[in-house]
Length: 278
Image 1 (spheres, rainbow, N blue to C red):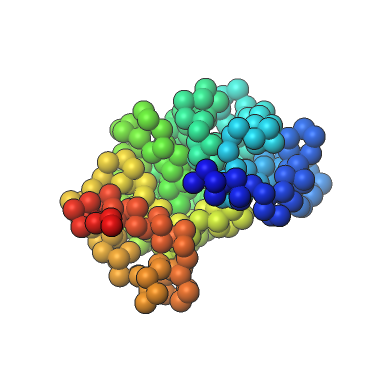
Image 2: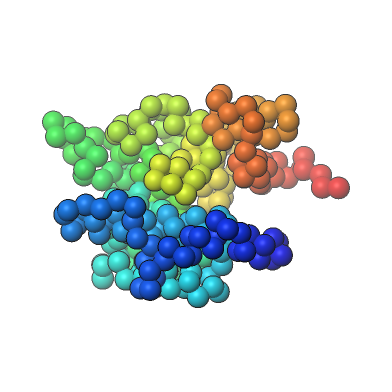
């Protein structure tokens, strides 16, 4: 794996992305906005996407450019723990940081606590901008995919993965399995079929059924839970003739290697007695 990472870090795509980094550690956004607040939010999102992209290409925290990029991202956090944009963007940023081995970092923990304080009575999360103007905020159900991306980094943490608030959030996801979302954030019910996770503005929030099952399994849920069992059986049924699993169930006929690896990891955790390595 170390040899593969070193090879990836010599790829043209990897080097090109590093060359786009400014001297202050930031990756400039590809779009510009007149309003300073909007521009700052896009800069934050571009920074997280770039770090995720490099992560997928084998980047590690020991590279000077990555360390500088992480420091630049941390500087965008307020003292109370909030990053720019919405709850799902904050969860995504914290997940990327934890993938770089930042579990337990005080900036990361502060960001996680900021999100936990905003959990709603139904166990989920809902940003105020996601509520239609004619709807009552108190009665509006939480956003399924915002909740998913809030608990996503939590289950990577060696303490918060078993926090009662995180478990409630996962319960909310499982209780709403296969439902269309209650907001415009991936509203159609087929959002559950998008199994891949990309490093673009839309793909970073994909993952669907697979991401929810990964989150639940990381928090200690197993196949005795009826929804987990149902979802796992559905994932198994998506395997294509070539042995791979699709990026988007029902649409992709070629298969996706990373989705396949992630599904096999989930199935190995749920059904360890059936996995034989030779």
